[in-house]
Image (cartoon, rainbow, N blue to C red):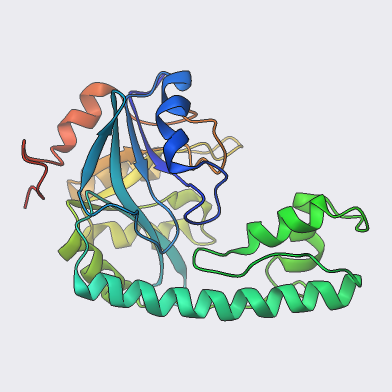
Length: 265
């Protein structure tokens, strides 16, 4: 059972867990520290972490960026204290997300001849569309089927979105947080290229539930080669936390915060 789950999504983006329900979900999983890493969106508090009912909730964010080779990867930032630069960047991304979301919804509704009755707002993503399709009584697709046949990459209703460069995203996150990590490196089409990016980061996500057998040796080698930290989390989009994460000792070794909760820079 992990002590810290450092990759959790809430209703701030495409998760189903409300912020107020995080402590209960953490206790059920035996988790003491939870990092909320919603896609391209900050939490509704400015502190790098807060305490709620005996659970430490870390202010995090997950940001998709594009590397120089064109591959898109996700960066996780922890201990966020919002800066003007980061907030401006995230607002640009959210504006594009809203535009993209409306385009996807319009396409799906026209193709299926249904009204999905969804609100496209900040934090909106394709999972919202997939849930709406799966819940609609007049559609034949379940959640995964919606991705597989309608809104997944290169499917008829897929719409690409704009993302910042790796350098711009990394810089904005580094200035606003205590630690920046590469998320789930073995999920990318070219994981070896993604792992090279760790040279410019503080950490890489080593502990992650890929749902299949993977060889974590390349990730462990990157930790040693670039002398960075290992992070980990469940990437929860529901209330099941603690599927993956860090032991207490490994989390403590991150040294994320001072006693006052300010960035340990």
